[in-house]
Length: 219
Image 1 (cartoon, rainbow, N blue to C red):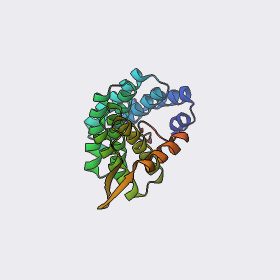
Image 2: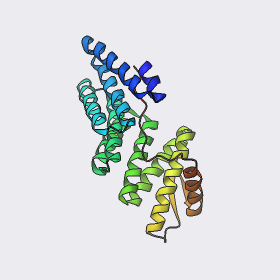
Image 3: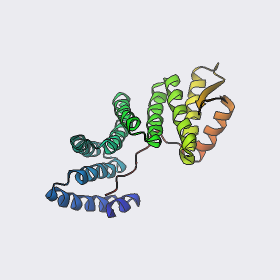
Image 4: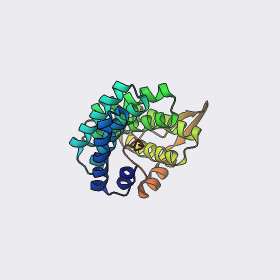
């Protein structure tokens, strides 16, 4: 817990020290679940420091333990974090592979908030790849789930990411005038101008993100 708090306060070296001490204890107890959580959290610390090689190494260690334990929720979280690493390295194919792994798990668990997050991450990859049709399909799916669940901050992020994807799509093909998507069975049409205004507003406030890391696992 102390390591989590310190990491959130950007005391990365201190949080790493506490995680390593906790890891030594859990290792002696052979507590595989806690060891997996610590590996994931250590990976997050290295990721935040920009050391993607070490981050990936610890994420993969966590993955091995979670798969042994068949800990689905934890597997989804670490798959997402691995996807984020590959996206940061511009390895979009591997990023998609891991985001889809997370999506498959979250659908099975019926974790709607995480499903929306997965679609958002997948959508941003497709935006980067220039596949705007798939991008908007995923991002609108994420928006629909977030609206259904009333997740206001995530609605903001989804709207901004859709706007940015649509702007790129519009620049690629200026014949596009709008998009339609379905929320709770109702078809909604969104005009280009509305999305442009939303994207510009939220981008100025630095709310948009290329991907989202799932919450640090509690110990």
